[in-house]
Amino acid sequence: MFKKFITVASSLALSAMCLTGCNQTNTTDKETLDKVTIAEVTHSVFYAPQYAAITKGFFEEEGIEVDIINTAGADKTMAALISGEAQIGLMGPEASIYVYNQGNENYAVNFAQLTKADGSFIIAREEMPNFTLEDLKGKDILGGRKGGVPLMTLEYVLKQNGLTIGTNKDAGEVNVRTDVQFGVMAGAFAGGEGDFTTAFEPTGTQMEKEGTGYIVASVGELGGDVPYTAYSTTKEFMADNEDLIQRFTNALYKGQQWCQTATDEEIAEAMKPFFEDLSLDDLVSVVERYKSIDAWCDNPLLTEESLNSLVEIMKEAGELDKEPVYNDIVTTDFANKAIENNK
Image (cartoon, rainbow, N blue to C red):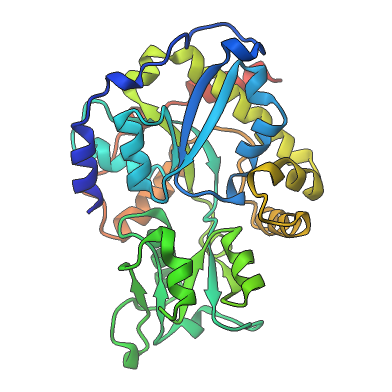
């Protein structure tokens, strides 16, 4: 479904992707800020360095005004990027691999990594303080969209821990369901679908407050380092707007560095404008949760070793036709320059 969707989206006109004045020099003049739309795969505290970079004024310092749209899925994020609805996409690098492997000449290139661990959590219907993955045997768990990083990472973790994925629950197999859309999994779970589900924050915390689910484990803590989310743009847009991409990366790096030294309360305060339905105390708890699994990158470099970790997960999931060429779908030029400029 993902590959078919992207093929259709790829045929849309790309002329809308051009921005006016993308090669301006840095400025904080509101009237001359370059407007950039980011399509994010989900709206989550998981992306704290991005929100901090906005509220702390780092993007404005680089002459950029950011608009964010939530697409609720990597397939939709990539479609928004290719169609020109957004100039930059925030999603798993697997999406760019799919498009690259289709032979699309204007594929997406990843230029900055944001998170380095799976940001989802396993949610149970009741509190389970002694939960282990063995508790998933013979149960249904809502896992997300087929071909997406959340599902592939979850399945990888289950297999690495000796569990078998399948529908024979009498034999102790874990039925990982892919028939519920990513954006509605929490609601479906609250409505009675599945024995367990996965969810990002702040959804997990909201479910606990509503009594519809309880966080019992971190997939990221179990799965280890993986380039879970990164920023990408199309080859054509990057070629025409190198200065803009550089300034964007500079701002992001400032946000990443700020989050490394800021307190949990300071990070929560910086994100509050983007999560007004959550109390400050809840945001602090979520920040602590993501810090505890070392989820955020301290710089935007997406290394070949990191990408290879994702490639292995994709191969294990049977979702990779051929391995991508690292230097084709990743550039470290902008990240290296941002780090050098801010020493």
